[in-house]
Image 1 (tube, helix red, strand yellow):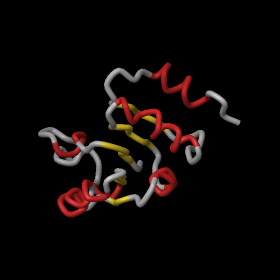
Image 2 (image 1 turned 60 degrees about the vertical axis):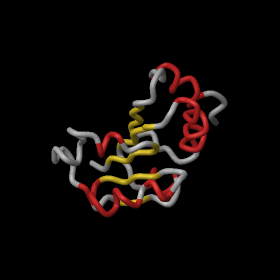
Image 3 (image 1 turned 180 degrees about the vertical axis):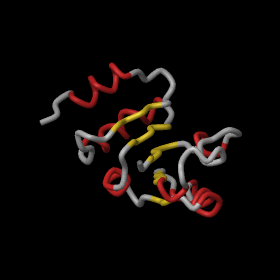
Length: 111
């Protein structure tokens, strides 16, 4: 299983995060952020993979966790739409964003 995170890294750096608990191996994690400077500390501390862009993140992922503030969610989902495969799973930890919203936005005008 390869887990990827697009957005904020609380899933990793908070006490009890998935990497500190050994729930998933570092090298099976890919991360991406619009601000590349935010990813560098995680590459060093956890030996995770850094995706240069959303395309690379999606190519290397089974599960994509969207960890972003709600005001950036639609932009990120629009980017993801171009690269997601039908067997990939999206998990959102964005406040106020539920599954119905993701499905509606993802499938709207999708060819």
